Image 1: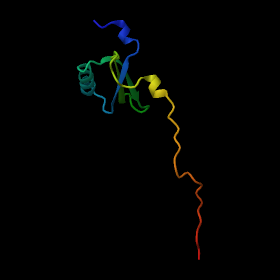
Image 2 (image 1 turned 45 degrees about the horizontal axis):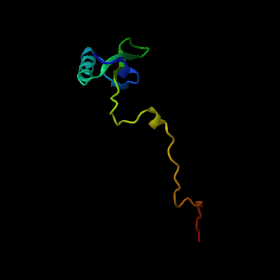
Image 3 (image 1 turned 90 degrees about the vertical axis):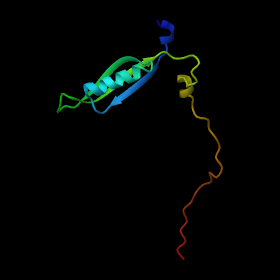
Image 4 (image 1 turned 45 degrees about the vertical axis):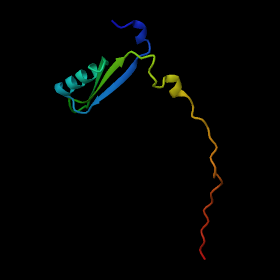
Length: 98
């Protein structure tokens, strides 16, 4: 059984299905579950004119591996470094009509 502490900051996987059938849902669930992802929820997109879903989003979670080198939230939030670019002189449009 997985230690509960590993689930404090899980990784998320979102799978978009543009064709929503029993088969496509089953394929997506089996595909990602076999890779260690745990089903979390499914959201259907339904249009007013039809009761049949036009799209579905399947959400999976996985415990975060402490040795994973993927950027964490704080790394992603950092502001980009400002760099000085050469050639930022003012540009003027001069038209020679001679």
